[in-house]
Image (cartoon, rainbow, N blue to C red):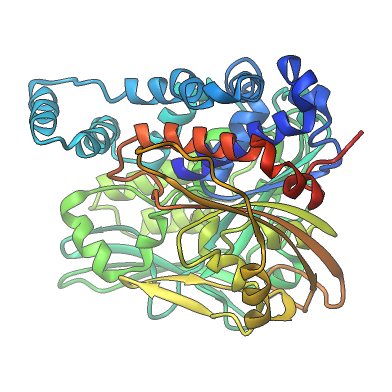
Length: 512
């Protein structure tokens, strides 16, 4: 969410300043500095995909803001506020007498955090209550990324020729937890993905593109690992209604190459793929409890994709899903339409890997620089990549899956992480602290076989970690001003003279 975007903006600006040194910082640019010169591949997930999209495609706005923060680290928080936060909050300006009343009421009771989330939710609600509307508003207002911008569009100089992996999860559903495309009292349209072997409820997937190669570019990596795709069968769709017989429809067998997501990747919208990667509430489609509550809320939290070619994979699926929701009388014909293009949910990559590391390793990375954010319990998703990690966690009927890809034992990795160097956090007097710590360290890992990611055993991988620990959440019911302060504290921490030996000593900054 916004926590990841703001934290990673702060980390990038802080590293950029430290890398340039005091003498060169006043004119530093990301492309000219060579900070990311040795980075061949960017793997992003959830709010990290908002950050990556903004840094890649918005040269005149977001990228310039980060560079200005690096040039003036003491003003980083105010620069983030002026160049990003003010734009974001502007879309939540009161649009009705009711909005104005809620804003005044929130002010009277010092509940600014409530008003800000209410305002953003109201904006989305008035425009159809779809997750894509939220992401489009965020990227459009803060990074000038509109729905017409495609992955093959021109990019910032620093990213030219690099590969971007936009990590997400495909909703497969199961016999016990079918994925609901539409549900209202007494009527439900759902599906499950059948396979030759047991299929996880959520499948790891990624859009991939060599940046700057144009709208006709094809993906350099498989959408779903070939070993996993070979196990997939076909989608089975259901329509159930009270006092009526259940209708069913079957799709054709899944094409393991997923051509709509690979051959036509350059034509896919940046907003659409970022929507999928960040759909944190998208897993609600497999929860009977949350679907029941959604009878009242009527939110559309799950993005839908299809096998439609020529960059139409999202638009075709969303149109069909909307049609089923608004025309409940549609019967077999509507179900057959879903099956014809294999409509399925595509949701936050955090449901299968919240670090972006697994997809990077699956794509051949031998050295990884990982930007992570977590709370007091540490980077749980990182720990669960190692042998002995949890298989899943279920909350309100929605599972989060963990896939182990490294041989080292999780307990040993926890101990190594506990020994990470922690940068000194600058004192800010009596102000509330939002940055608890920044941990810096290196893990050496050996891969284990994992077919769902397509990772073979026995590869040596170095993981260099920058772990930002903050008490702030992802952005719901939070006072957004606090993220400006978080940015400032991160930049101040990374540029503090006393921290320079630790930052450079862990080789986090490549040198020309």
